[in-house]
Amino acid sequence: MGRLTRDPEIRYTQGEKPMSVARYTLAVDRKYKKKGEDGADFISCVAFGKNGEFAEKYLRQGIKIVVCGHIQTGSYTNRDGRKIYTCDVVVDEHDFAESKGAAPNAPANTQSAPETAPEGWMNIPDGLEDSLPFN
Image 1 (cartoon, one colour):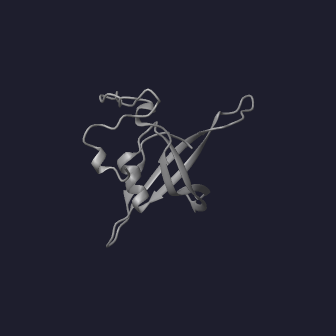
Image 2 (cartoon, rainbow, N blue to C red):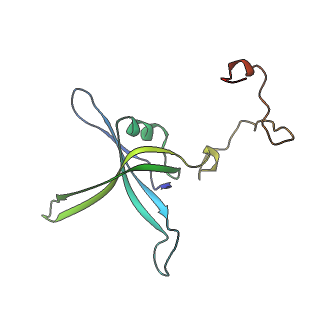
Image 3 (cartoon, helix red, strand yellow):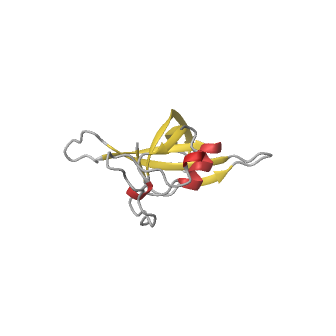
C-alpha cells in the first residue's frame, strides 16, 4: 500500500490487439525507520491489459492504492554497455486505499454528505428502495 509518486506512464503494445501497459511507482512508508534512512521505499509497478486501462483512467499522483501482484526481475544492457538489473511488481489487482476526497490535491467535494440517522445508519434516499438488491 502506498501513494503514486507521479501519474502512470501509459503505452500500448503493437499488433493486431494492442494491450495497455501502465508503469508507476509507489512510495511505501516504512513501518520502522533507522536514523538517517529514508522513511519510504519506492516500488516500481507495471500493470497490463485491463489493469493498465484502470491505471490510465483512475490513478493519479498522490492517490493511495493497494496492490496485489508478483515480483518480476530482469536485466538489460544500457547504451554504455553496463548491465542493469530490474525488479518490478506485476500488478494482478489494485484498488483504492482511501476515499477520493482524502487524497492530497483532491478537488473539493461539491456534493452534500448523505443524511445520517440517529443510530449511525445512512438514510436511503427517496425512490431508491425499489432498485436495491435486498429488501
